[in-house]
Structure formats: structure tokens, C-alpha cells
Length: 156
Image 1 (cartoon, one colour):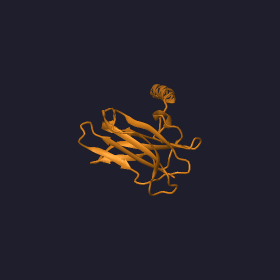
Image 2 (spheres, one colour):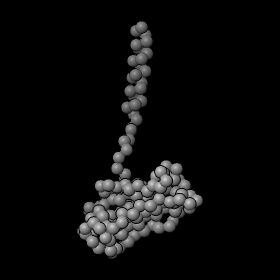
Image 3 (cartoon, one colour):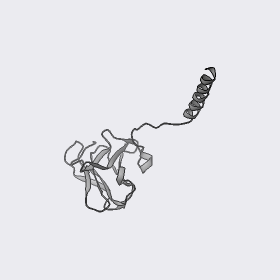
Image 4 (tube, helix red, strand yellow):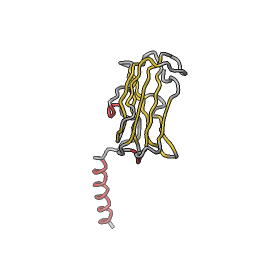
């Protein structure tokens, strides 16, 4: 019996050593640096683009308080990631400073371009103004698509 305990103890020590060298990443907020945006992902982001029960992509919105700029990307997921298809993202700086309508002052878009992984980054000033975000991801054959549109201005 003592030999069995020693073997288990030895195996446990090896397992603990191996596990100690592993790093487990928890799902959390997206990293802006991975897509060319700076700042922090805003509350409520990412925004889901889904159709027919399938999630095509997520539109991520970031705000950099040091520069006052907003930045957005549209990142494909699941079976759509790695497949070339139209993938779009547009960000408008609104004249308004309260949520609702959006009279665009400036616009940046990465529109109707074929990408495998993500569209963007696009960026506009935003300090003291709301922004409007819209995105679209099509399937690889142009038959189905999913969209997100904030409607009017938000994230003011």
C-alpha cells in the first residue's frame, strides 16, 4: 500500500508542476490593441450581429479618454471567422450630446470590403458628442447577412 501512495504522490507532484506552468485565460473584455484601437471597451460592448439563430460577428466600441476618440471594429466569430465575406463597420461622430438622433459631423467607415476576420478599425472624435455605430457581416455566398445599427446617437 505505501508504494501505491508514493506513486500517487509522485504523479500528483508532476501534475502540480505541469499545471503550475500553464496559464488559463478567462473570457473577459476584448483587448483593444489586438484590433488597432486604443482605450477601453465601452459598457454594453460588444454588440451582437446575428441572423437566423447564428452569431456572425461582434461589433466592439472603444473610447480613449486621453485622446477623446472612439474606435470600432467588427470581429467575425464561429464558422464565419476565417471565411472571406463582406464585413463592414462605420462610426459617426454626432453633433448631438444626448442619446437619440444623430446628425453626423465626421464619419469613418470600412465598408463593403471582403475580410476573413474583422473590419476596421475606424475612429472618430467623440469628446462631448454621441456616436452612431453600424456594422454588417455577410455569409460567404452573399445570401444571408447580419447587421447592427445603434439607430441614433449613443455612448455620449
